Image (cartoon, rainbow over all chains, first blue to last red; front, side, top):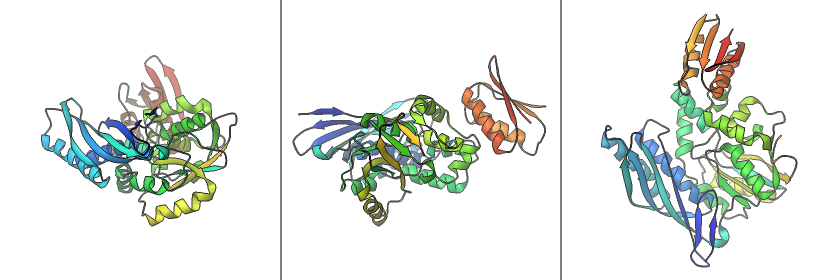
Length: 305
Length: 67
């Protein structure tokens, strides 16, 4: 029996062929519509299993809900979650709700993975490319939504991006020798890159100009619709990042905390074209970016180029 | 001078109030905020609108004058 831990989830080896992945995640509403919130929270929870290379099998609801709100709203949140679990091919077997002043929702998910095929969040090697499977900017666009300044296009896209499962992306990349993988969430893209780089003892060259942003996220960053979490992420990481000529709005986007972000993985360059083609053939519904490459360890873990 | 007192408010309210104050108004606006990131966001909004922002640290946070 082996016991292993990582940022994304706990992994427990049951036999030589099967390891169990166990994860839990929940948060407060990021959108007004309860059904959509349920979908996003569930997609975010399920993502931890995908980020480890696993297949979600069983999910349990975790919910908090105030007495003063109509329970129909809770029903809608749970319906959104249940639909995402179904889409993931897992089974929702119940859960637990407590009374709380602010609604919260998420899932505890169990999944399986072959012990030899677990995606680790470290192990990238110089010469590899870094690929990200969703556009960046959900924290900034959600701030614009809260301020009533977001365009309809931006609202539609951010919801679609946050609610989309990392299932297809994981199913494509598991056919390739991916050396490191994680899902991009609260630490922002650079937070997760820094973690991956330091754990792999390499420097990541990231090219902001090559990264797909969610519609209008760049304009909102320039307007100062930047959440407090982005500044916290920057404070935490900036000593490890060589900024180069990156512009201020690019830095805000790179540090922007993501809700239910994409998979970030490192793979030998020779597989890049084939992977990108597979994403297209599998109709991956989010914009994919090749965000940079892995180099020998330099002075800082991240170099913006 | 228009004054926006956004002290104690949480994001993105200080920015919304600033945007409202700057709308169709070219005169100077003074904004009071509590947190450093709110100050930086207000400075970004001013710059994005082609306006000049000068910030000073005060006892209870920051004072930003947009001209």
